[in-house]
Length: 137
Image 1 (spheres, helix red, strand yellow):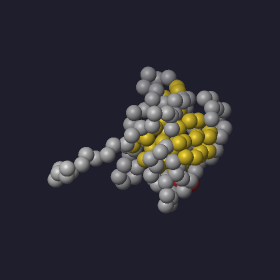
Image 2 (tube, rainbow, N blue to C red):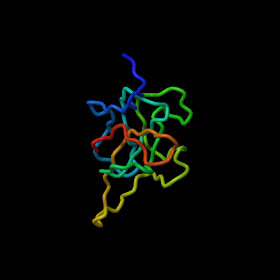
Image 3 (spheres, rainbow, N blue to C red):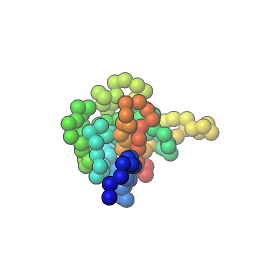
Image 4 (cartoon, rainbow, N blue to C red):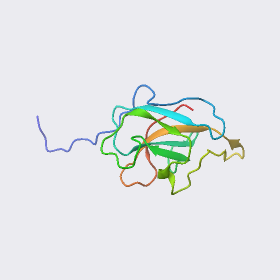
């Protein structure tokens, strides 16, 4: 039964299990951070970013990497790992920092809490970015 009505725009379906994990809950300053991801609906421009905790809108990450490992991915990579141990070349522009630095909360206290997020560009590469999933810590 066909109609002339356009179909609804498909929405991103979030996985039932965490699709991104970190290898530790606590790190020493500058220690490598390994982030493992497993997402069934990847796109070539998906990327992993590390942000301050408890954000709802994702602008510029403290540090980030393409999930496929390079900026010119021809195929998507839904399963893998990235290691942050220095400032990646893709972070040459913008407010990116390594090692991660503490930040000031609105109440005036200093926080060292960060979370990893699997993100994707939604249209042109301008923030805010669309979150696929995030780590619990």
